[in-house]
Length: 257
Image (cartoon, rainbow, N blue to C red; front, side, top):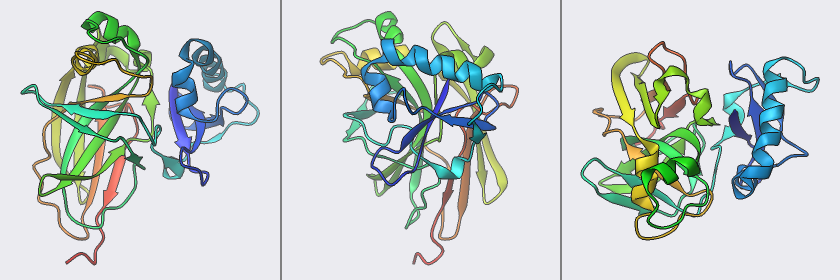
């Protein structure tokens, strides 16, 4: 299933289920209003959302409406823990507040994309297989930094269960392509090969993870010199070109000096 959170004036937004083709959505009211509620009681709530998603995909929900990514906040706006694991074994931790996929920046910054793995409860010292069983959802994240200091982390509009990832998901490994448009021109297409279970196991090596904690698998810094007035479009897609999580669209304010 594909999940998003619509802005509603609250800190966490309102949970919606999104159709597989990203054209329709339906509020999850009556099942859960926030994604954290789903993560806290996954075994009971997730099957109900799956049923809703099946009905939505078959056009059987009378109150479905067109999905509008511009109305989304981050699918999980707050988390008890966000940590990015790099290829060298380093871990960078943050408190875990995520901004909307279209939130503008006030200053040019360095972008560091990551595949974000959202976990259920996971015991300390769990092996990668157990960690993979605790994987609930995946999405795309970008840390934005100025002089090495994190200023904001954006999430793509959708958080999706692994079964929605297509042929690129096999044996706990995601193979996909990160597409980057800078000021409307294609800048880069980067092949991605990530193992979320291994990342969650690394994060839980010394301490347990609580439902809703997020491990980011670093995908390498964007080789871009962003300036005032620039725009950036990031989208993680299958090898066939189908979008997985919706796009992160960033504008940098034109009045930055």
